Image (cartoon, rainbow, N blue to C red; front, side):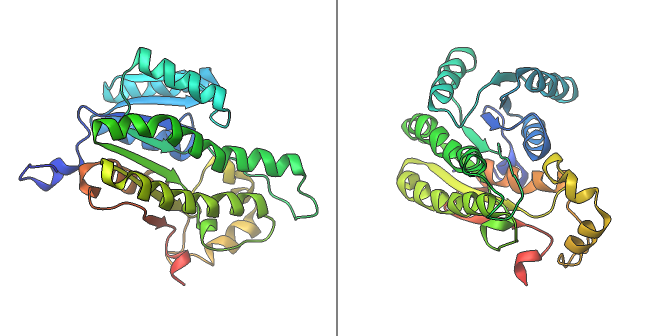
Length: 260
């Protein structure tokens, strides 16, 4: 437990190392930047090394934090093992994992192919399982760790033409709860953030269609989409000592959509 007398010190990540999958863009990138601002060393990973390197340079230039770029397909157990060995050799122990890598293919159940289903479930659900299986035991051995999953409002509600995505994100909440129980006695917490509509590249087709955009806004009590920066506070909370008595929980950052 953090013994500091100042509440803001509970959010400090000095001395921590955070690994963010899907950290080269979107919510993963802004979370990585926030962790660097809070004092963490940051590892950016995605399938494209050049994109990871560009983000790592940007974060280092803007925060002076030590930042690393490593390429991996985290839906592959072979790649996850290689990533683990690279991190161990080049960086050292990982304290925080954010499973932000995710994809979505929209379409009706009759249009979605088996290959579409497999690719979405592999990235959105299998990858967090593989990452936790490989990295969490080391956290448990050291007695401190944070695993944060990026779910979705579709972890709780249904929207037409999102069958594989909604299924994977709903399954991720189940994985969050089970892992939380398995590691609760070992100092490792496992929680999920479920964003609503944020202006990410994944949502670009929705942003660019005025009718669809307006339809989504009509369902959000706050009356707007989320700004990417609005994910950073909850992400920092779950990564820090401030959330030390919280595990197996889900935070919906959705402008009130799921409150209705």
